[in-house]
Length: 59
Image 1 (cartoon, helix red, strand yellow):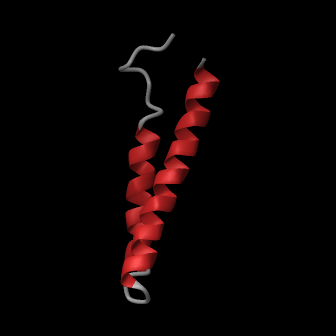
Image 2 (spheres, rainbow, N blue to C red):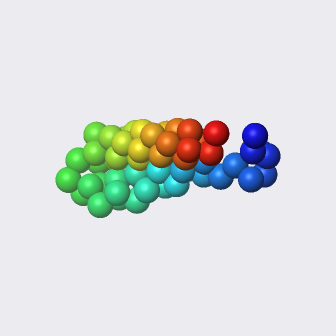
């Protein structure tokens, strides 16, 4: 079992959200509301998928 300090799989969620915000800034001129929120949600989804893959490989 991994220690809470050693478990870095939760970092993928925050990283995915930050990635989504960064991608959303590129679409800010074309469609401000829909593309920005969609990019954040896509980044959150990717971060959740990556964190579940990382945590399943450790156990």
